[in-house]
Length: 115
Picture 1 (cartoon, rainbow, N blue to C red):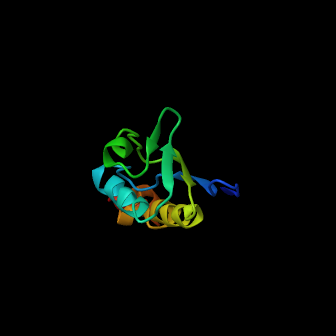
Picture 2: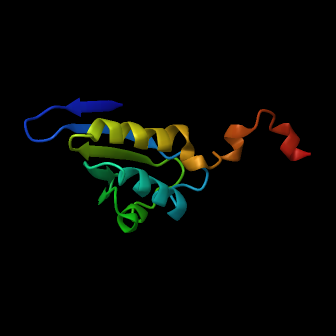
């Protein structure tokens, strides 16, 4: 889900993503997120049901404690908001922070694990 708003002040874009890598948003993927976010000039806010944090701050991103399955809302405000949202959504939902998804999702034949 992506939305975009034009205003005389700032372009706003937002999307919802789900953490799908097995270990969730621990420090390494949180740092990847922050590194990508910092490539853009716009302000980036990430929120779960409890917290709104600065998507460009590793300390604040770690406060989300997002485990596998957590849904996050990413909001960007600024001239390059759309590009930032696209890059962050790709990192989270397509690349999975270059980490494996839960093993049960990767296995074609679960019976082999029992043997």
